[in-house]
Length: 393
Image (cartoon, rainbow, N blue to C red; front, side, top):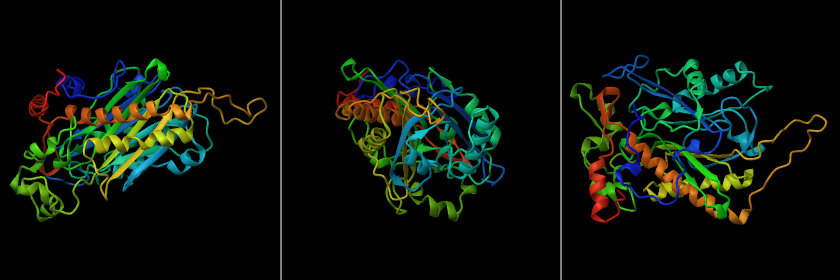
């Protein structure tokens, strides 16, 4: 339902850097993205029955047909969350297989299903530790209902396509998420480095589910302080309980303030891809940079936020861990450490735009207990940017 939605540039929001043709993570050659979106039911939350507003996002670094490893690394700005497989990733510096994102309580089934998908597709391994990240959609979705199943994981991976535009907003694992108390979810963007810097591409995909409204900054403006109305609200009085009032106290006040002691809590998963020939220690440095994009937009890395990032390189396609005769060595290319600043900048710029794209594409919707989450008000954002002569179209 978001394939035709506007993107941040379409409504004139300014960004730095030069995007790739698709302005998506799929501008990095070979990277494939697929989704499975689950959306059913209305009204009162009935665990096991819905409403269901969730899904699975799949990112395949070398596409759906390749099990070849790639260099990779990770970083956590604030680790009140989960991404499976990072211990082995950091020890090894390599990863093969799909990177999957879902809701918090579906991590286990998604991880197990990934192994079965790889096994059924003939990928050669004795054991595997898939990477699965999560953000919490429990305010909007029946998160305890066990609605994500193996077939949904298979469908997301099987749907992964390279070289095409990526759907954004209420799709895949991002279906039930919100950002700065607007509907958020899935977003993507890319940056093209200059020929002087090698002409490489950096692509980013986010599952964004963090932030309090008053913190939001767009184009450097404190937009959230002006757009302080229209917070999420439970619109059916018959469904409002004392527990909902306690857990979501600030939404009942009508203003975005820290009345429940957990302002800004939430999570964001960021996947960074590049075709630059960077090594694991360099990718760890790159994986730190989404933190700066989150800061640009007003994020604070809140105490109970799971801000977890992974970066991988599709270069060095002949990487191998085979130890048979003649395969004990791999020849690799290496990007100069002192030239990494351009990739850092591209990562920051693409992450910033991907998060805003998630909000621009996110559609107003009703979730569990008739919780209404509005979309980012495009016209009001344009008006605020126009006042400062920042509008680009």
